[in-house]
Length: 187
Ligand SMILES: [Zn+2]
Image 1 (tube, protein in one colour):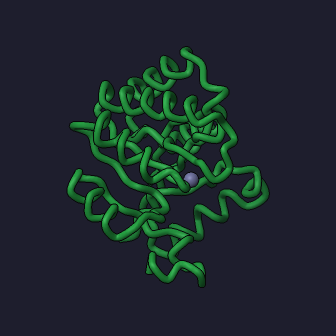
Image 2 (tube, rainbow, N blue to C red):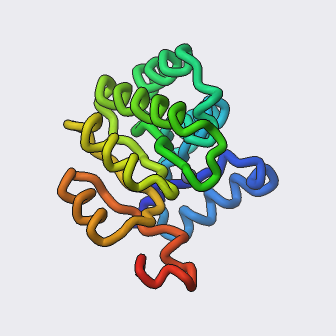
């Protein structure tokens, strides 16, 4: 059984062949897919996809790129989604991105922590996006995420950090970066 824990098939790039893509995945043994929200609009689209397809689940959350746009009402909306739709299985993707820095870092941190609090209240795991922010992500997880688990999506940290991550009960996901010619350490 294959379960794709991180897809963005709500993206407009799939507008012309979304159903075919889902069908193709199924034909090739992918029995489950979690479609991941990155802002409120894509979170809503993820839920709509989950509601209309067997085997598709949703995660809701605001990506650090869009942290600057997060408002109080968004957290209420996410809590309401989780409470009313059992196919919403996680909070994410959330975290810190110091590579693009599309939102101020202090805002990224606040929004990350608020999502972690929300995940704890709702009893859901978190999906972490960490790009060039290993130190702050680890500090926040150690301080704020006691009692919850999740996945370090698209892992790009060191072996030492991976061991710490596993000790905290989190999963590590090896995605695209492991295929880069330059990422010899990650391999
Ligand atoms: Zn993603």
